[in-house]
Figure 1: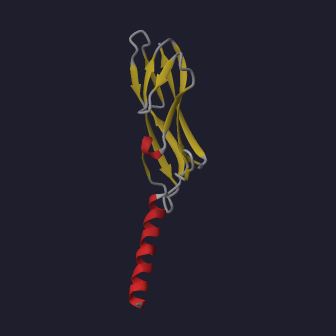
Figure 2 (figure 1 turned 180 degrees about the vertical axis):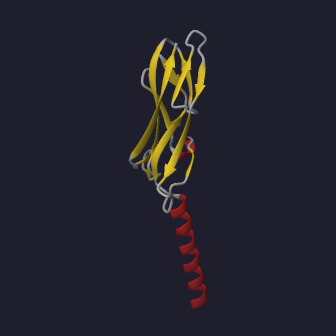
Figure 3 (figure 1 turned 60 degrees about the horizontal axis):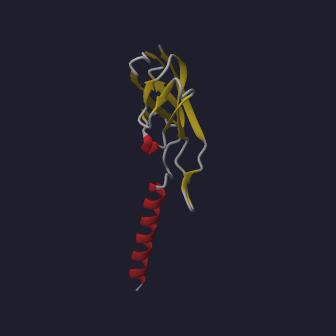
Length: 132
């Protein structure tokens, strides 16, 4: 009976470890986002597109490209001049200059209630896009 209880306790402990790791515990924290290219120019008359990428640097000095899975979002400072989609592709619509900003949570801490959201502080990086 004791060996069965011990085996059950080990299974529960293993499940808790897997759940904690899956929820973000033990993951490195994001400390910097670099957006590339840092500056770009495209023609608005042809609705030209520019693809931006966000590289995250973590607290252990490792880095990798970020994506929507990491909670990455993109924003244009003026959507009348240029828009940007969730994959980082910006489209010039009118002449002007915009700042393209990539934002992601420092670490993915998820809150589940009537909605699912992250409660982690966010970090951003930006680039400049000139639409001619």
